[in-house]
Length: 73
Image (tube, rainbow, N blue to C red; front, side, top):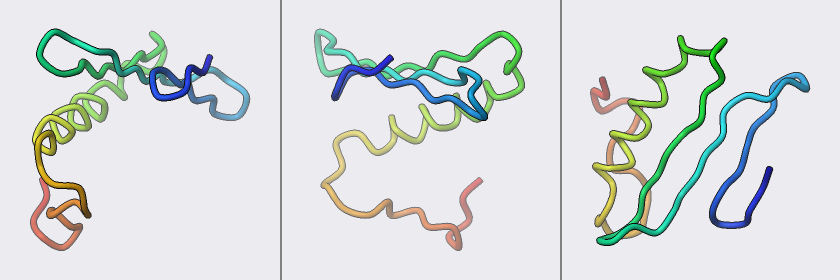
């Protein structure tokens, strides 16, 4: 499934994997991930990604100021 700028899904080795969605909300936007039941171990990765996106919201465009050598946890 693909809607430009709104929703896209990944497949891995031909198997449906995660889905990603961005939608307009009252005071900004809402980002979410869909994870199949068999990939529940991937939920912490998705939660960390959403937290990082949340931290980046509102920052000027440009490279992520937290690089791999700057103590990312």
